[in-house]
Amino acid sequence: MKDARKKSRSIRRAWWLLAVFAVAIGLSLIWEGPRTVYAHAVVICLDCIGLI
Amino acid sequence: MRGRRITQLTALLALNPYFLYFGSRSIYQGGMKGLCVPGLNCYACPLTVFSCPIGSLQHSFSLLSGKVKGYVSRGLGALLYVLGSVGLVGVVVGRMPCGWICPFGFLQDLLYKVPVPELRLPRRAAWGRYAFLLGLAVIVPLLTAESWFSRLCPMGALEGGLFLKAVPPRDPLPPTGWFFWMKIAILLAFLLWFMFSRRPFCRAVCPLGAMLGACNRISLYRMRVDREKCDTCGKCRKVCPVDIDIFENPDSAECIRCLECRRACPRGAITGGFRAL
Image (tube, rainbow over all chains, first blue to last red; front, side):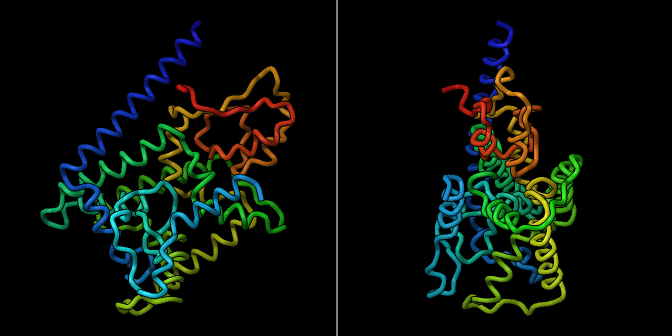
């Protein structure tokens, strides 16, 4: 009984976190998050290849 | 070839399918480059079509540092986007991408097959992941606006540095200096280490592994060990790529959910599955 309650609580927590992360992605659109990541990724990252 | 190897090979090709580079000598510029795929796959690699979450994370903290005027809000947007993307995957499957799709994990699995004596990592090496995440991927970019994890990342040296040196892009790159050779030396040291230890980068260095591993305890996908069936024979540990005793803690942040232990268990005591389905 106790185990089942604990299990359902942790499943609920996971679904809540899923919603929180989905909201974070949604909010990131306000400040152009995906576009900022894109703009950084389409130029060759000189840091990454050691040519700085 | 077994299922996991096929998946790892397929993921390697799926993350790096841009063979048009050999003709155009210009890296992929399409919209998919804005997607962060949870695996250590350098976005400086000419063949890749996705973003590296750790590179993007550092970039967001660099913008948040305020050293580039007028970009702080964009840094916040990028941070929310990266954390949201990694978190979504983490909450669903935990560290499973490390075991099944990460190209650098695949490379470590392959190199560990070289028959040399084993060098075991102490358990406290796992703290290294959190130190690299917090130090090089968060604090240093926030203070200096420079991506120091990327600068030292061996995957960047392999997929970006060496590849771009071998097949240079149309626009010329800056000349190679001592830093490039230091990066190559770091890469060689890691490649050597991969032969002696089981997935040392994943266990002691990878910031993405630290983020996804933290989700293992809360994810919808869980590992289970039936205590009545398990006789602690240790066969699971022998095949475990991260050298853990799954029966001690099935939700360990170390576990990459590769399911090798489930295959190896003679009593069928280890299972894995989604809790909510």
